[in-house]
Amino acid sequence: MTWLFALLSFVGSNAFAAPLLQPQPLSDEAYGEAYTAVASLEDGSFVLAQLMISNAGFGTGKAACRALWVPPGKAGINASARFDSDEWSYTPSTNTLQAGACKLSSQGDRLRFVASTPELTVDLNIQAKPKAVRPPGHRVDVKQSFYEAELLVPYAKTSATVKAADQTVQTKGVVHMDHSRSNILMPNAASCWLRFRGFFGSSPTLLQVRIPPNGGTPDAWAWPLKNAAPSAVPGAQVRVGVDERGKPSIRIAGEGAIELSANQQLYRYRPAESYGAIGKLASPWIGDPTTTTYRAKATTAAGETISGILEVLDVDDPGCVTQ
Image (cartoon, rainbow, N blue to C red; front, side, top):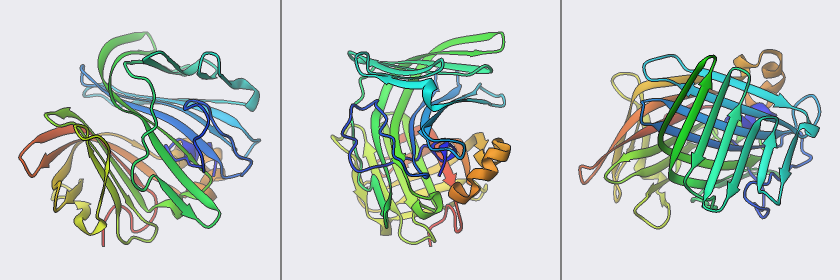
């Protein structure tokens, strides 16, 4: 496992006992940790900001920062920067995690997340303070390895400044942020992960489905945010597949029934391809996963419509289908 694994938002560990923005490095070669914010903005754009710590192939405790901006109707810009172990730090007095010009900090009831690279900067001012929410199935244990994740900001308003080349865009929207930590080989954690951030509609909803390695019964949870906490969804009630257009779909039966379909593809990301020799170095840990991000729409049994972002991480066979 390397920082490329962290680029996919995977992480885990026993505790999460430290302050929420303080990384907890491990000595394992497979260690990776990530803080990830995704936002859907009023101008029609989509952004991602990510800070990661990992034991990459060349040394331990390195950091990486990633920014992604998909303007409305245009191709996305994805950029990253990497840092040695002495180029990042966590400062308890200001509750700030920083790597180069990339910074995640919490003061009072606000968060600021800056993912800054030479090609692209995403600056999010989030109207929330982090609070750990651990959904059902947030931890996956395989022998002596694990994956674990928590939601830090399930849903909040944000203002955003995006800078690319000679262009600066200022807008606002809504954001979701999570924190993950892991020392597990990615194909041992799942064959597929689907995450829906249903930002808009009368009942904003979060939904996650994990297809286990080699397929089998899904592990899922749903959270209509009007409820106090996320709830587990029985795996037998979950069906994941593709619709007549070849796009991913999720159907949940029973109480809390919901049907979700993907619409516009926003971005497709293959880290093993994007990082050349380093990607090849990471392949024993991460395989050749693909993360595809879509705009998506869900419909509840009550006829409510929820729209947002669907992230589909296809890790290994049989991929994003249920048996």
